[in-house]
Length: 332
Image (tube, rainbow, N blue to C red; front, side):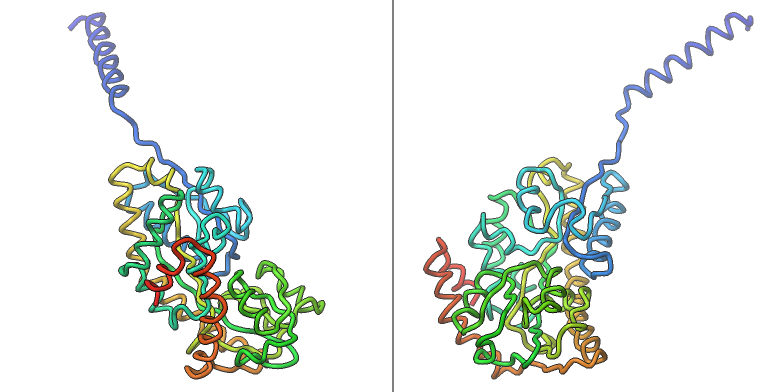
């Protein structure tokens, strides 16, 4: 073959190859954002990391993730609005934080509505869970991994064991239905984020408070408390804090990506149950080691709290929230 002819052939091959290359669509990784309020040491952050890694693997890298812990991207309660608008993709989100916009979600932080983390996790397969999922999806948020956490009661001056013990205490109640119940029982209520409790206890703004077992430890509240009613056996405070995602993001995924997200989310629920139960045991040990007087609530004590909850928070929810009585009936 003559040199010129050979050169022409080579150029033709290169042109054809490049043309074919341009016709083949290139798969470009899409980065999604996960925002939450918890510290990097918190087990809920680690669960979000596991979720991100598993989805990235399951989608062969078509979906990647960037995590923003400690409210670095959005403040805790602003995360729902961001997801509803499509400005945020995922969150590990305490669902009752959205109750200002979706009042029905107060059922996920209702005093004594469940008596164990296992009961809460079972909601996914019950009518109550399906109803909550339906409500959320209509309002722009999809539950991917159910996660419940138990909370304890910490105090200074005297222990809080039964409802009569709250009289006269300055309480951080964690949720408006808890605020209502404890106020009815005689406590003075101060609203704040759990991350602000340490300073409030130190300065005397608070002398008692409720929050999750994990937050009691990660915010080092044992340094300011004298008594701790651990949730290791029973708790009056259980909160749904699932991995959730924006419906805008969900609807933008391919069918294969949706399948991967849903399967990973379901798979992680076993891990979610494990870390929530482990957190209760860790809280007991950490507070005991710190010299705090620790009490494990009994069933009889829990029933006293439930009686109070039924007369106060449950009744208020049924009276003020559209469909509230139906949700209570389903949850019970």
